[in-house]
Amino acid sequence: MSTFSRIFRHLRTTSAAGRRAFPPDALRAIEEAIAQGETRHRAEVRVVVEPALDLQAVLNGMTPRERARELFARYGVWDTEENCGVLVYINLADHQVEIVADRGVGRLVSAEEWSAVCRTMTQGFARGDYHASVIAAIGELNGMLCRLYPDDGSTHNQLSNRPVML
Image (tube, rainbow, N blue to C red; front, side, top):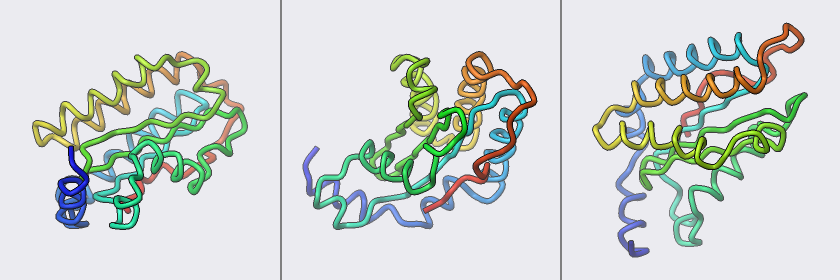
């Protein structure tokens, strides 16, 4: 894909496109799915949706992975007691989903497992089904985290469950 086509995609993917893909009801459902999962495991999940990068980031060649890592730090997903924070980053303009996991959980989950969660979303997005595909992916993610970090009553909610819409 050319730089020009990527620039054009990011310029035309507005915040309105983000609100159409993730209206308030969908964001509330995502928040509830995260909260429900976190009653069954000790890990922390954050979802960040970004319609498009700003022009300077695109011109600098910032990848969705690089942006996800930046947001992982900005939102303090790394700062959990057991190093078990997970950021799910959705970039609508690039049609990309990235998962960045803290070192504790990152050592326990294979790249294939992370890719499967991302595929659940991207395949749904290709059909225009943003809401259900994110809920399904969070269900898969919660299942993995329940297996790895089952709730033992010792932790409290360390990060907001509310999805961030940039």
